[in-house]
Image (cartoon, rainbow, N blue to C red; front, side, top):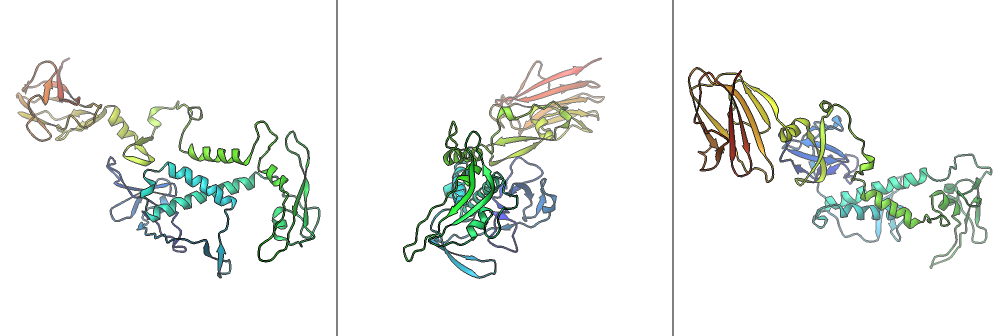
Length: 398
């Protein structure tokens, strides 16, 4: 794990991620995802490119070391005044419930989560709480609008005032809201929260709370068909998290623009089992097409995916360096060269991976050539089909 240090809070590891080696990227070798931003860095840990946030360029990355101790139910937090306060975790609140469900969905999508180090586990847990905070924010945004001024003064008003107010064992607080709430197809519900505070010593106490308005504002409706319950809402959340990295065909628009406007393709690969990554247009074209390439002389190490145009006439000999013909299973490697022979005949030979080709490593389609005619233009194609190189030569005539 590596990341950017938060100088104000050493426990904040949200801007961290797992370093990756990119084997098929000629420009950038190392990559890390920081809070959804893909950053590329050099061997010294300096960020050299970040398409999503250029301000991170030239930022120094650091190694992350996290040690998780055995945690009891008593934890120490700090109040707003800086005083350490002991708190006991006795039950899970709604935010914890959201976070646990999200964490379960995240872990199921990870490869070998049981092998995570302490830093990876803590970062994953913090990401789950980011989702939980977003769910709490969304729930608040979708509650019944209580922004109008209350009709009564004092401690009457919204839910927050009710929770912060005090009552007695015999006199519960009755907090009246602004209006009544009428669910779709239902009866009007008074916007009232009854808080009954029961005093007790040693063993705690009991009480009751009427949360009809809050439940309705959250979207629950037991009388609906089908019923909208807390369980169904949680199922929707789990489905949303599980499908967050998936695309449905119905949600994808067809691209109708010019192909020249495409800059990148978003692809998935077995070499990268965490995130998809961008494939540049030129790399894609090299894999699935032939790009024109002007050359002064015949290239010393021809690359597949190119149509070479050689401008200088060849001399008395030409050795073409072919690479491996078994580089990918089920794939074809091809390049084409067009050139002119000079005033004398040109001897032709090949090497495969820098060595004299073994028997059967190079085969011809049509006539096998060991020399090329003088003052003649040729177009030759070279195809690696998985078992050998096949070569075809054509004289270009008017």
